Length: 345
Image (cartoon, rainbow, N blue to C red; front, side, top):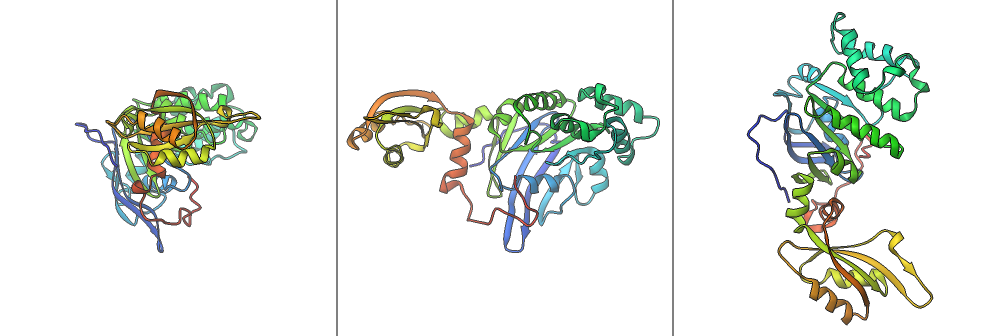
């Protein structure tokens, strides 16, 4: 299902019918989406979905088999030099020189990205200031924490002040405090820059991005704001259930109830084990426009399950993600999700 917003502006990033094929394996198939000027788009998908392949094509590091991608109106294949002047790219592993100082490294990157000698000091200073690196300017990069190394990675991506920034898994491997710091940094860059970031971490999308494109098995299955996805794809609501009985069997029973599109177990912290009963917590997501609550309760009672609590809840982005990446009707034909690049995102 592909739900899209209409825009009257010219997109900064345009991706149309993009495919990448390795032998008999399709890493991505017919990927299409746009990113508007000043927007943060999250490319969200499970590991192996094709996110990194898409990002590498956009950055000009990998040719597409079919389709087109444009940055600021320039085709990434036909005008690769012009495109590289228009983008800043941070791969999952930041391209750093560990024996250089932060300031020295950024001067080096600015030079190879074509920043003139006269403009270089101001550009480097601006990048360090935006990434909160001024106090670390003389520090050897290998001595920095992972969070600060990630800041240096973002600084090298913006040092030439590009209109578009491509970030591949920018918070992977960071601790919670570092994630918050990098997240706030990315949000501060929006408006001035157009940003596309890939992630498999759901909170990063809802807390950072204006829009999200969900990719699964190499295909984009939905595109919209997180809020609209939750409303339009799930009706915006579901049911939280507290039951007694075998949870796995209860899920099978509920998946056959008319109007139910997803049944998921809640985290193990919700599970209560006693000597006399096995109590579990389930979330049931209903189809838009349906009210299957009575049928859910009746099915559980007929199946011999105890129903301790049933309450309406709003659907979450996690519910949407699970629906789009686990429902058979939303999935393309089975392919090997591991491409020859070692795609892990």
